[in-house]
Length: 144
Image (cartoon, rainbow, N blue to C red; front, side, top):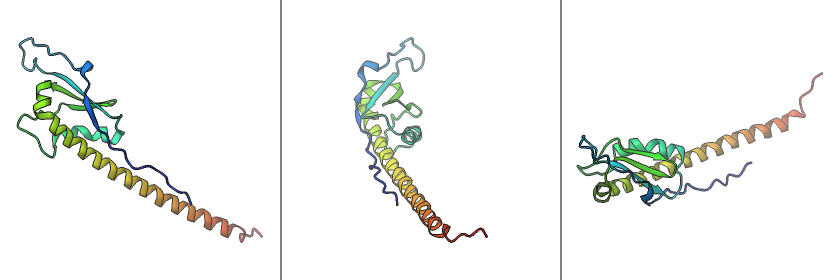
């Protein structure tokens, strides 16, 4: 039987603001022109499922303030990009919400990977049992 040595999910952590890549506001007097992109560096590139679930988790975080800005969060490589905010808003409001969202996504990813590993182990066990059965019966097959 195959032994699974898949390591447990390693949580993604927030490292800090990716300062060199913070955007610049347009400041042209139009609505929202004072807002810009603030990338938040992660400890590593998150798994595909984690990244795909971020926008929804940001839309409905476990807790947020009245200053929460919907629709601004996405993942690009090893960064969460908050596109349409300010560094002051990140400091005062979004940082706490983002920490909760990352923790929520880590928990969901750990459950997802544990289930995938259990499913793979079950499938491998079934296949191994089938192969054992074939080997035990094959010598009794007569084509006469």
